[in-house]
Image (cartoon, rainbow, N blue to C red; front, side):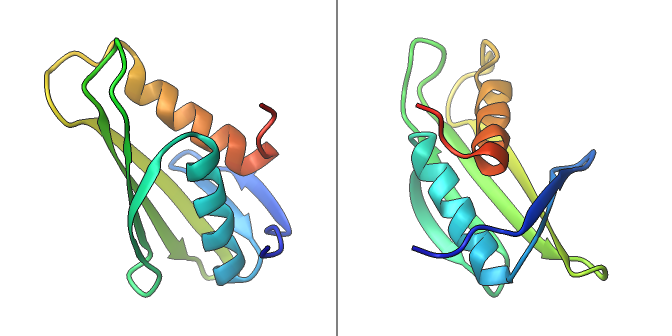
Amino acid sequence: MAPKAQAVAPRTHGVIAYGPYQAVIERTLQALHACGFRVTNVDPEAGVVKANAGASWKSLGEGIDVCLRSLPDNGIQVSIDSSLKFGWADWGKNAQNTKRFYQVLLLGSRS
């Protein structure tokens, strides 16, 4: 198991994680898995992780895109975008996916 990022501080557009880049990617993958998302593509060089969320009464599933970007202060910006695969009303599901991902990334899974 990869070591956790050393510290994480919230920012307006995503969160900033501090630690080795590979450790932050591993922590991102662990958070996606803990949220129940299925990872479909990991491209560490591009800083992109793609995943899917399954169908629920709120939607027919969502596409999850996570972007990781190295910052000048040795931090790594981690941001997520959750969007519907089909339909136009998400009933709050995209916001729920985003909030849950950041909670698990920051605090770890509590379920």
